[in-house]
Image 1 (cartoon, rainbow, N blue to C red):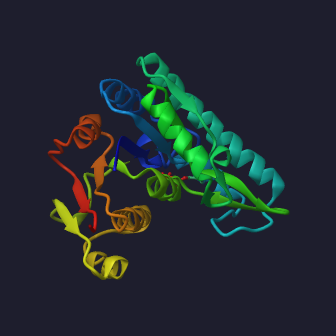
Image 2: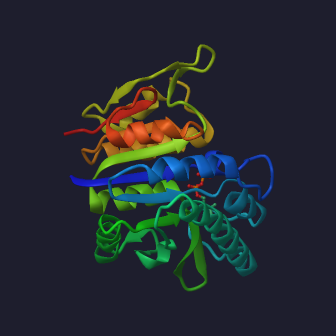
Length: 255
Ligand code: IPE
């Protein structure tokens, strides 16, 4: 494991999902401040929320490679660049040294280019923070696909084996049940690994959260602990990175 915090900022934290192309600048600034206070190499991945997601739905684009509308490819990508700029500028204001990097710089299709991914870690160690994002990527010929920020987390975690893997969403973690909002503090991967997911799904993990939990399990199966925290409370991201998490869900890595 390497001394590295790999942090995903979910679209539900950094944008208002129900307001088209609206960034949650207050939340972004809060997170930038929290991250600026950390003394550990960091790589940030962010989602699309009401930017990339909005357009990818409009143009009916999915994770499956296909000949999607080329104009959609352009518009989705540019909307992600716009959101990325907002985030990166907030980080610069807070004193961080972010460095925007689109996924095709270190992936090909949905696969890592290991030497390029390793370079991101070297940058992070030199106090420059790579900031990448879910995006639409070229696969082959006229085929493109959506490469989500969650998938990028797995791609990066597999190569870099970070000591801290954090998913920040707009909820406190995984709930045992939605009504009581009782939180699952810790989840262990059994030998069955991903198969167990269907049982955990008995706990309330619907929609976008379900995908995150699935990705978290995938990363935990590599032997890494994965934390799911509320990014609207930036302290929790700091707590997760410094090993002092007070509220959130830890998916324990299978060792
Ligand atoms: C979004 O990435 C990528 C695009 C739609 C371009 P994510 O799927 O990781 O985004 P959120 O975090 O769920 O919004």
